[in-house]
Length: 215
Length: 267
Image 1: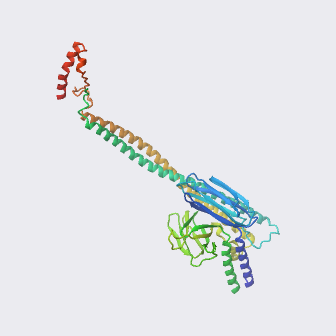
Image 2: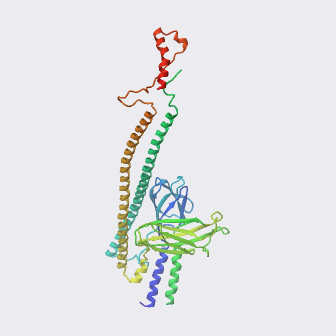
Image 3: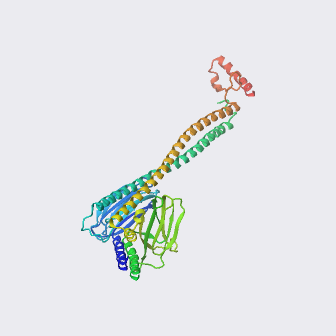
């Protein structure tokens, strides 16, 4: 490959990097301590279609408060004690959008929250792709398979989260049953022995006085 | 060669610029923030971050602060640290998982101030890409010289591979879940049997022990076929004033009672 072609190739890569900056898909899982609020911010351009999806993975009743505000502070989405939800909106203004998850209603349960914030569409595979020409059949088949696989991956993620939820409950239950059975065995033995000891103590002081009652 | 180098430099610079549009959040100066990534094995994770410090004088976040570093710590599902490094205010970290499970990515700044005195706020831009999203397709196309169709097929192959790994991991997780449920089932079964046995044994023991205790204290008549002298008497002595009101026979019986009583007490 000649130098100029190599340069051209790097220019393409460079442009791809630039374009990458204007689309974003962040999915994060974080722990929200009790009485805490965590906010995330994102700069969005007007007209971009965005989707916010969240699910509570572990903790308490698996619910969290969620709130989405636009740059002027107008609340676009507000839900209290929601376990799972998905919200799509188109950015009407340029600026910093803010979304917050709040666990302030809970006194001692930590919650693990997963969220997926998608801004804009996926970057095109080829930055210099001219969309004027129609895709060939093979290419359009590839595009549809790609979209289908993306939704498969999305469903898989939700399945994984549900399974994590169920599994953490089952593990909690297992440890609780273990502690409870040991605890109850000890309590039973202690109570029965102390009953006998107490009864003995009642009778051991008054052995001469219970034979008669005089008036 | 020089144009390539300069373009590579621009490339790197613009890569960081692209991060300025990433999601960001605020943390305290000495606060540690952790994120969980549940991933199958042999999955690559790339994380990029950029930190900005709050400047009280200008009441805004400084674009870059030299000397501000972030410590990145990554733990694998067995809570073993697989990466623990300090980066500058902007950094990029990569790791590949070797065991499937929940990995923890923790970030905290290298500020040496005490938690009480450090009132500063940090703005952290973060972007974590997992698995198939870590692939840079234009770069791969350039490196392997793929046509458009080949590149699309390559992308599909990577996606399918990720799905396959995730399904495999799902099978392993489901097995763990099943084992936990089976263990709970066993424990509940054994516990109920054991509890019934303990209850019966303690009940029988209590009865036997108390019976022998009361027999020893001569409070209870017990053995059949043996004449006992330890019967309990309840004797009521009417006051002398009432004695005159009773018939004569009763009076005579009553007068003999003290004698009987003393004989009994001596046994």
